[in-house]
Amino acid sequence: MNGLCRDRGWVSALEAAAQLGIALPGNTIVPLLRHDVPEIRTGACRCACASPAAIPLLLELLDDADRAVAREAACALAGMGRGEARPALLRLLREAPSAVVIDAVSGVADEECLVILGRIARTKPDLADAALAGLDSIGSSRAMKIAAASRRLPPS
Image (cartoon, rainbow, N blue to C red; front, side):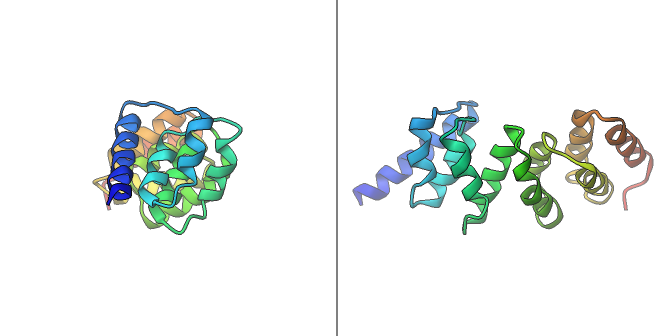
């Protein structure tokens, strides 16, 4: 029981740190990224900084058996500008789009991402604002054209 309480404590602490935007240093985050409990790995991804020790572990976690861990690893890597996260984020945009994934992909978007964001803006009313904000934040001329077109077309 003591281990369970300790694990819940870590989950709560990591959740609070992530909400506050706190990035934990490599020597602190590495054991958490390797933890047996998926919720702890998920929280650790949200608090990982771009340290040489954390990046290889985040890359490994892209293939984690727990989907939430893999998603958060992809989002963390994208937030660090790491293009290695793009394939995982593209898959998530197609299969399980969310505002968090849309926000993350903005940092590593390519042409395919832009097209998918435009499609989400037109076909998913609950995510349209997030997709348009993502396109706007990318700021490329192509992203701006897709956003403008998405705003003109009626939702499908």
